[in-house]
Image 1 (spheres, rainbow, N blue to C red):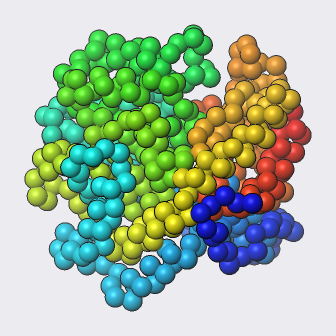
Image 2: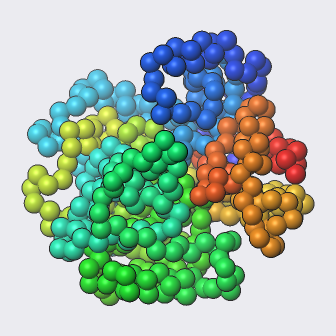
Length: 458
């Protein structure tokens, strides 16, 4: 049975059911969409959602899909968590917006208080709220540059930090985020530098330690930039879009220690990994990292648009009045949703639930990896898990990426009622991001479908 402190409540039947796919209503909506929605906005699933709850997405034709994507790690508490719904309904009865920069309200303050409590470290903290992960990253860089008086920012191979101009520059993958065969979105923001990530599965030297991989990056920074010129190092403690890459143990602590020594602001981008997703409130905690600034979004507010930068008081307070903010940043309805979502995370002990999901998934997929011949690695923490696919017979030699199999497996799963997401620099990673309130039974059913799809691709 599910191992949560208390059981979640579900409105929808937690079973998958796929009939005509896509059905007539979804097909009709696709026609309407093509006439009015920009082609640059793509969707990986060709059905249109009517309802979602727990671990289930129901489309307009009555098909029910098991959700192993959570809207890219957003609906960790489920897509219609009762606490989030109640908090939103209560707030919209009073006011939907005043702009915190003009007429402030308690919800913004309450969220900032909660973030000071939950984020790593016992130092004095400040927070500023925004709408998206990219906004949070942009503002963290602004804070670091102003507070240090330096301009250079260091990011890593395989990184993903957003789609705005600055965050595209920080992002490592060109297509589709920075360019395509049709052209580039550039030029990008200057003074951004990239160094090697610790990627244990793909290291040329498989014996390299995390500390050695960190020294490799530090040496490059010192040679090419100079530590005294670096305002910030920004890194995802577990890389998301790049392939759910978990750096070797010791990599993050060594980088953080060097940054502190050099007066460099260490920014942990926890947009995808934060809020119980990895079995801790923040992925930085797994190795005892205390970042100077943390960027967060996605799971923070149960699906409402909200993001934040939380960090050392002396850094955030170095910015002059009016230097941070935005019209919708910390919207009162989104703040109410965040407080509801965090309450659910605490009451259901979703950190423990994420760890239980990891045990259930890895137990099955590690066995399958030994048999399949195309799974190069099963990795991740908590309910942020991934499988990297390679060409058959290459796992121990060239580790040649296998994006074709990855795409086929995702399509097979969808046809059989399971929504999964792909990612990775080479397009050869399947990521598993189930809602943390998914039941053991529904998760097991989804894994049955995934296992059958992998066997078919093998």
